[in-house]
Image (cartoon, rainbow, N blue to C red; front, side, top):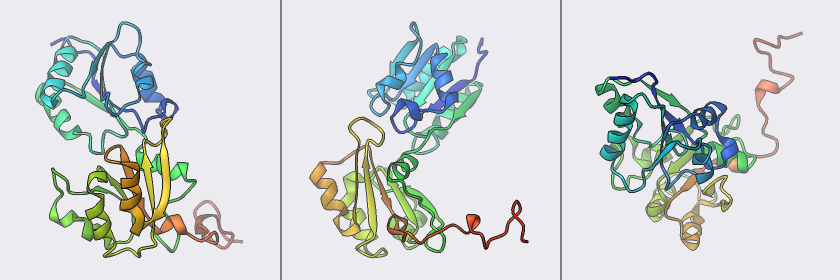
Length: 255
C-alpha cells in the first residue's frame, strides 16, 4: 500500500461556490481524483479541481462502485476528494464510507460543509433560536423508504414545537403536514427552500396548513428543505439577553 494522504470527505455546502469553506476549496483545488455527487453538487464547484484531475460522477453508481474507485486510487497514493453536497455528517452515508475505509486501513479526514438549514435561515435573515420562544433546532426527515426509529417519529419531534428542519421530505409532504398540524398551530410559519443558494433558488414562507399545497404547486419532490418554526414569526421585540444592558456575563460584569 502506497497511500501517503488521507481520503478527504468534503462538504460542498448548499450550492453556491462562495459558500464553500476555505479548507474545502483548497482541497478541491489540489485533488488528483474528485469523486463527486453530480446530482446535487454545483458543477462550478467540481470545476475548481485542477486540469488533469480524474473526475468521477456518482449519480449512476452504487456505494460499492464508488468505494471501489476511492479505495483503488487512495491505495495508489492519489489525493482523493470525495465531494458531498451540504455537510457530509447529514444524510451522506458517511458512516458506511468511513467503515469501508477503516476496514481497508486507509486514513480519512472529514471536512464539514454549510448545511441547507443554515443557508435557508441566512437567506431569510432569520434566527432559529429566539429567547423565551424557542431554543432548540431539530434536524430530521420524513420516514420515507428508509424509515426512522420509532423514538424519533415525526409526531414525537413535532411535540417539542422547536425549530424543526426537515430534509428529504418533499415526496411525503401531505403526511408530514397532517402530522405537524397535530402539534403546531396551523398558522405556524414554514420556510420552504428549494436549491438554496443556487441561481434557480426558490424560497417562500407559508402557514403550516398551506405547506403541502405550496409544495405541490411548485412540483417539489427533491432538493427541498422545510423549516417549521415559531421563530419565523417572532416579534421584533425579541432580544437576546446576552447583549442586553441588564444582563451580566463572564466578559461583562456588573457595575
